[in-house]
Image (tube, rainbow, N blue to C red; front, top):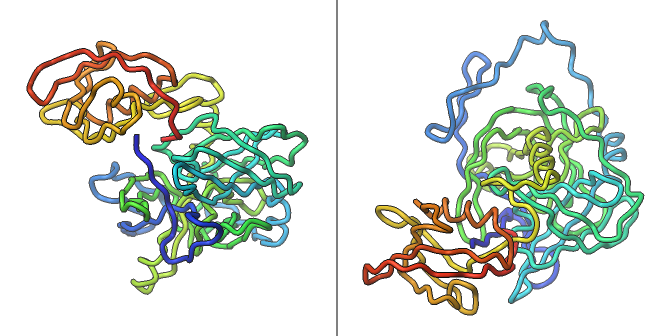
Length: 373
């Protein structure tokens, strides 16, 4: 029901017409440090922090050999290109190969709204069509499958729970969306539980992301979905955002942010289980074809019923309020999205609708195939 693209506004557009480079831009970040503890954004998360334990109590951090790590990780990466109707707009990003037959881990915002997904394997140079197996937009994680892939080099998955502040890591991905050999950027971990507000540069919407690994490295557009690798060349995070121009204007070095690999793999396992949740969508995406907002005092208000799509065809009009789906009360726009999230295209749903005149009615709607939301 929504559609958004993410790119770093300070980088020029690369590629064909309508190409957007996939990257969240962190535009709001509040960090407090006191005696080795990191705080979080007020009102976004609980005030938990991460202690910077005295080095004498821990084994020394291993050194990172950027060239060796890049050489080990790059063959297990892919470059991703997407397009969307009706104007061919799309995004360029990165992905991490999880299985020899072509399952790929990437950022949700790289494939959000995509009608077609094309993947180029860095290891063998082959171009594959891909489909979205599932995603969790709240975690910014998606799982793809490349058609006809076999014998691919797979990434070694690490343990993000063992990461430490100041540890050296390497951010590797399709910088600039230009394809070819991925770009590797070295940096130190500066946060293990950061909260950011990520900006969608195309429509200026914002998304809160919590539990991020923060690195002191100028991550750039196109690296979204790429690998954050440790000195042992294991993947410990999925690159998702950068502080970008805001940091430069403040005289700070731009930071990168990654979803911890433990979080990402939990989403992957949920998708592989075949059981959807309120946040994890599995398989093709169903759509009502509406733009919605919270109604008062309750319900999801239809701001726009898109021409030619299911809600419009079923007679819903702008201003109607959806109050239930299949007998289940709908209290907000978020609740309606969660309810549609577990449905499939061609499912028939019964919507309770409060019309602009105040009359209540029940409307039967057959859901259509939509792009990943």
